Length: 166
Ligand SMILES: C[S@@+](CC[C@H](N)C(=O)[O-])C[C@H]1O[C@@H](n2cnc3c(N)ncnc32)[C@H](O)[C@@H]1O
Image (cartoon, rainbow, N blue to C red; front, side, top):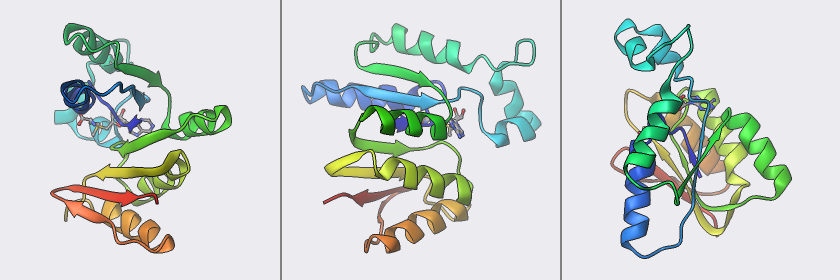
């Protein structure tokens, strides 16, 4: 499960890696496809939303990218907020080996996503997050706080953090 997909770059990268390894992988991409608060607040980034009638066209670009790359057998979109998707997936009993969080990067958003998606990760799987950097203090605080609650220090690799589920 990828939470925060934008136009699909990271999902397509993971899909190519999985295919290269010969894995039968499905990547479920959860995204509102409405952009981050930052996209709306910063004029420079707002143009990236490609607004039409006031509505972002990110989803269309994502679909076009995935189809153009021939990865539609691996990548499944779930156009929904992270909270709603987690509730639906929990109720439907859908589980994953890896949840990769790259949606909101504010402390509360990250902590909520961690709590919601940790329960969806199978035993032996991992929760991975993006943005473990000095300019994203909320990400570091949320990952560390949740890690402490389960007796783990997040493993950090570049700007990614990892918690493993035994
Ligand atoms: C940083 S971008 C993801 C980038 C992508 N992982 C990549 O590397 O190409 C963040 C994405 O999260 C989505 N997002 C932010 N908050 C969200 C939420 N609460 N629920 C669903 N999607 C959300 C935005 O629409 C945006 O597409």
